[in-house]
Figure 1 (cartoon, rainbow, N blue to C red):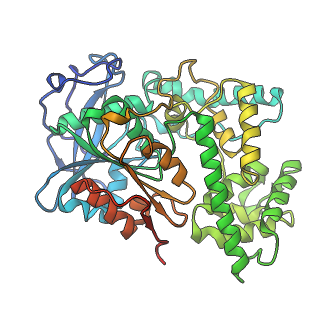
Figure 2: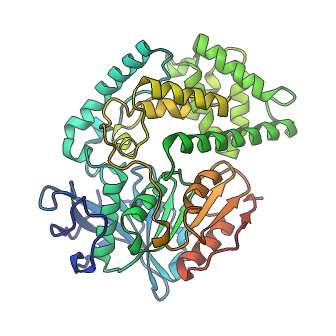
Figure 3: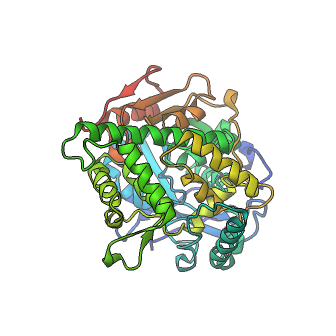
Length: 475
């Protein structure tokens, strides 16, 4: 656990019903920074900030957010607030781990991050109760659907019952209010934001609530949270299919691919169908582990997204075509269960289905768009159905485009359309296309082309030319 030298209560802050705050409502506060301790880089300093569990009850129960700051190495011109995504990713640990990727940005900007409420840091929830939750499943009938929902509800209960009030206030709009509390505590009139992956949902939520408080916003490999779920899922599936086709083309040209010379797509689809009829056994060392079609899709999904994993994926498919799924065991990326506390964020952000018919329609749509991975995203969202309220706290919605500064997006080929869905809403915005696969080009890869453009934008407000692309890296 990180040392928290100062806890600041913001009891006078605006309630959740307010769409924005007047300058007079912003508390004139300051944070006290000190060494973080633990395994966090000595270059970072940490502080604690108390925020209401429920922003509609500012005088009620609070939780303390751990903040970390990587100070500018030159004269600071402002602050960039950074989210690694997740949802629930521990920003303090991620910034510490990837600090070298922020070196250029830090020449002029302080970089501040935080461990979000209920997130993977385990600071606000009992992880023993919340680390596991609903299993992935794609039911084929109403009876199976009802059985899955009943099982999922039982899996959710231990986490929800351990922290019921917090569990009910984990949506990204609530977390955007946490972000604005951080801005106020830093004494910044406006903030710049860098969101990786699901951090884009936080960014979109903040932009809707506090457009006047944003100086700049860069979004890297983010999901679409401005269009209806059906539209955003179509974009995700189209992107995933594009990534899989790149894997297929690689295999056709790579003599060391275990599927070289075979119809890779047909082989994969035949394996999935076979596993659906009768789940395939894994390695003996994995115990009585069997893989149905959903299991194989989820395991493959993690490898399609990583070029270094392509040889292992090809080998696993080749072995599975003989009835043995042991090639998927070492990947450690099977579906297993979903972390309940993080589901509480996604579900409250609108990623769910209103009943069996809506679920069925979604599965049919995905089968048309994605012959290789249909049902994958639907079974994930299905976990939300047992507890999502009739009125979703933070559904996808358009941005207040005229009130926002131009945005900068970054998207690899399979996520580029999702990023564009957000950035295209704001006139003057630009989205860089990374001409390869690879999620999170700034945070995860430290891609020099992407990093240069993002740093210039966040420091000087200068956007690259429309149509800018970054080549595959390393070449």
